[in-house]
Image 1: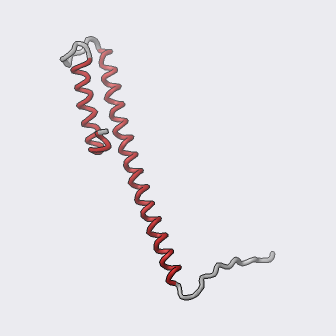
Image 2 (image 1 turned 90 degrees about the vertical axis):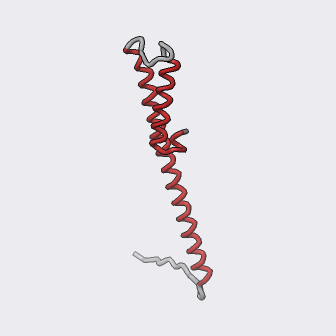
Image 3 (image 1 turned 45 degrees about the vertical axis):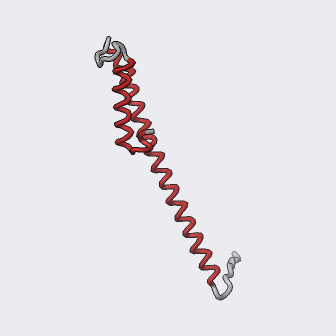
Length: 102
């Protein structure tokens, strides 16, 4: 969620803060950054990596949404210009198909 609001750096900062908080409060020994064993660092590292991946994912989603909005606005503007052209034409616009023998 922090990546959605604060961008990539906000997402990475939120992930880092959450990782440190979880490590300090929930990882034994509690209320310390000490680790009981070297293997206790693996869940902490996994939490940090997953949080960073989610931040990158949300940034990608935000960029896709922006691109979609821009494309939709371009299509609406193009449709508006086409309708204005057709409505302002003084003579008829005729579409013909050429049939070739061959």
